[in-house]
Image 1: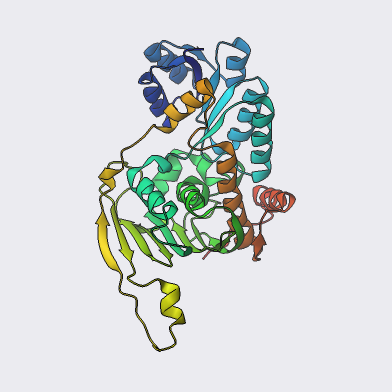
Image 2: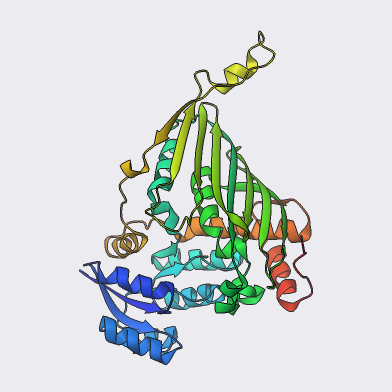
Length: 376
């Protein structure tokens, strides 16, 4: 197979962006488009010379696609992915991989059993500043990582939610700020720190009219020993900040603009200690010691942008390589999100692996209205 025949489901919003990306990939062919909005499907079909269809099911029945891209509301990610994988078709699904980790389990297991690619739209891993931060951590420049401060704060108006009412409901969105916005940051956090081990959280709604949470504050202990303090909210001004501390130094990344824009001149600073922190702490001669890091700015432009998620997905399907964001790694992200919700709404410490039945019961209560999001 020299070209991958791809169908795109959901051609408005991010789906249109995916179509534009595919049109620039020589090894990809847009073979079909599907949307419940017949006009949108027809217009996309005309623009991209692809067969317009109403649904994923119609696309799979018609055949002629080797892979699908699913750009649909969250609650459709799992059932649509399972349908496509069962039909022998590779899947690229938008984030989150699913609303529940129990569904993500089934998706990952089926993809592995059928030897199919399952990729997820966590594109923040491809951003230069994040690649630079990953290089600093994995190359050992900070030594053993022990502490992380990570916040994503932004004000989202009611107009944002009025445009897409499904984002307001537990049944369809599966969550608020954690799933809609911070899932990208949580994916990066797991990419840098590994598997989570324990979570304690506060979750609530500070004033939006929707059902789901607009604020989440959590402490996460990772299996590696890293402890992270997280703050996410759509009820704040825009300030995105990350501090990663280790035995040999600290890295700080801060920006006050939209982190979604890859071209932002993110400020990333690296401070290294002249003496490793453990030696300072164990020095019996000094009662008080303030480490004086030597600071330097990291030029994120030095980190060349590699393949996009879409290019990575096409290559994985055709060459048998691994996509940038695998289903298995995205499952870890949604498991941490589920754990934060479970901890904050049940008011308890949650250990990993997350009890799938426990979280599914929680989601059932939220959907039925037996449990409501507390006001903070």
